[in-house]
Length: 115
Ligand code: HEC
Image (cartoon, helix red, strand yellow):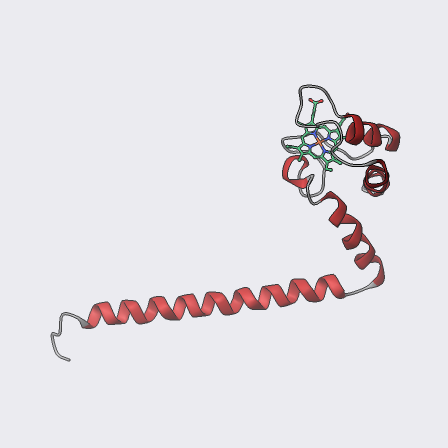
């Protein structure tokens, strides 16, 4: 072992593998925690179900729809949201027919519950 030039590389390799293993373990733990959170408690579960409706919106309007690339959606009139989702806004990413009317209504209702 003495003065073997390969030893440091083996140590680094072992450390790297250990680190990757550790990170994948903590990652799995986090996933379990998130899953547990989603399963838990009446009110929360409801919100989680409805928030699935707006999964496609958060990329532009922000995780809580309070605005990012697209404007804040909190406090908008439900009828206006339905109108935007079905008829669109010309020359913006909000294209006509993004959602059918039933979906649009469900989304509008959900957004109106956000504070
Ligand atoms: C590709 C990005 C993008 C996505 C995805 C997107 N939006 Fe938008 N949205 C915008 C932008 C940009 C505007 C602002 C348009 C303008 O200039 O009037 C906007 C405007 C709106 C408006 C009008 C806001 C107002 O103040 O009148 C509503 C309502 C809206 N979006 C709802 C949604 C909903 C609900 C979803 C998901 C189903 C969604 N958007 C998905 C980019 C996006």
